[in-house]
Amino acid sequence: MTVNSPYMSRFFLILCAILLAACQQEKSLENFSISAYKGQWLVINYWAEWCAPCIKEIPELNELDERYSEKLTVLAVNFDGVKGEQLQRLGNKMGIKFKQLADDPADELRLARPMSLPTTYLFNPEGELAFKLLGPQTVDSLIKKMQLSGQ
Image (cartoon, rainbow, N blue to C red; front, top):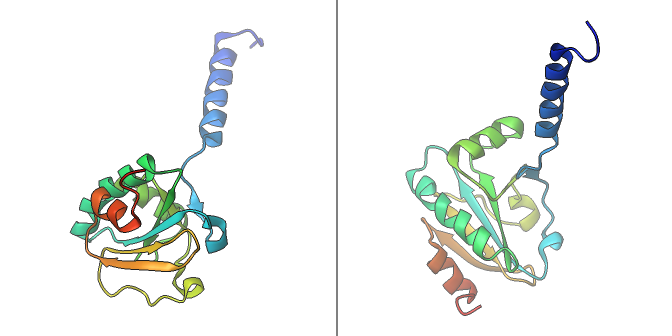
């Protein structure tokens, strides 16, 4: 088999495709530090696969993250403690397009774990807890709380 054979060409193309796919940037699991988000609003949302209101809320949070990305960051926290690749796959299955936290930040933020889902915490640009919201949220309800509607 020579270097110019059709098999080598196909092999090379497949190898390149695999390498490119592996290098693609995906919304990866994030490690958390609140100081990294100073200067913008931080939306931390607790969700679970079995929570119907959480599933309903995901498209709203995706839209919020996309429309207001210069003013805020949306972060997902899996309530059930799913981790690693399994969490990434589950987030993809659920349609989560915003960042997922690798670990629950409740201890670092000195927050009690939520007792009901979905629960959303809003931190102001100074890094202070501004709101704890229970139940599903919409883009409109969140921008009103953060007073971003005219911006």
